[in-house]
Length: 192
Image 1 (cartoon, one colour):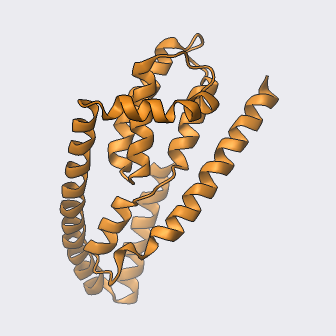
Image 2 (cartoon, rainbow, N blue to C red):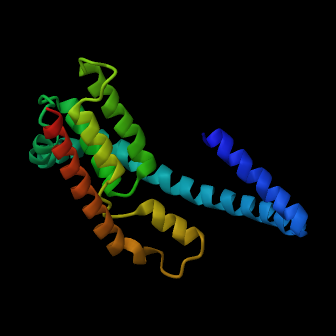
């Protein structure tokens, strides 16, 4: 569908620019926006490298074991079908921590690794397990204490106070996570 929609938008934009006499403005906007995108990507790359490295170091220390023990009661409530598999628990915990730190790009590979581990134990490979569905919802509506990526974007775009969004992000992500998890648990009970 997007393979059809985006080309149509591009063709309509160029056509409108030609017929309205704004072709020069379009050309300058294309070149200035590519420079802005490149600067944004470079600043985000540094942030992602830093936090991905910290997460990689954390997986090699006792931090993950301690964190898994702290999160175990919550994990039992959220993922009751998962056996006491420390590897899977630590994968999910690291994914949750990466999301809490606002590191969506670092959390994605951790979440995919956890999903792959869950899929190995899935009896019906074509249907998501309840734990897989819960992890997807938890990732989508993740609680973020430090919205690192958003702060980095706001900072790179010249925001006067890039961290002013922290409290609204806390409120929005906590509400989204609670509602998402409650609805997931309700749909799981209905589906049984």
